[in-house]
Length: 155
Image (cartoon, one colour):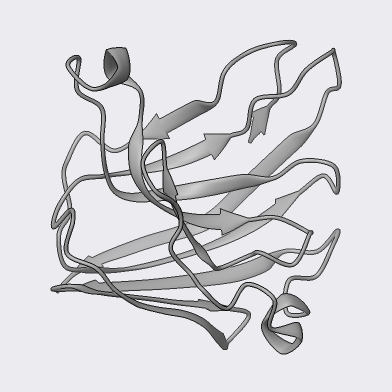
């Protein structure tokens, strides 16, 4: 479980190991007001924006973007069909939602609750850590994001 801290930057719990080709599954539930993400093939290097976490992010949110791919601290949205109503409707607010991510070569594919969401071809980063995000917030709300049943299998 991750809880927001007043006026903090994004926070991440990251693997020590880097992953290239893998299948990742997890369940997630978050407060309606919060958005979050799961970093995949991501990095943090002192020479890049003072160590800022950057790379592919599978969006976790109640605003219709769950499962789409965002490029944290680099290029922004990589998914081009974020306005697809069928894909937007899959994430269930206030419930546990199952995510599946498969990365193989330049392919990144995601599913939310069994529905295919993202199918991206991009080869900017071939390997990196996996990180669970607690998004930055202003003020002092106590919002939470929870994960369970995390599983990873290298391909």
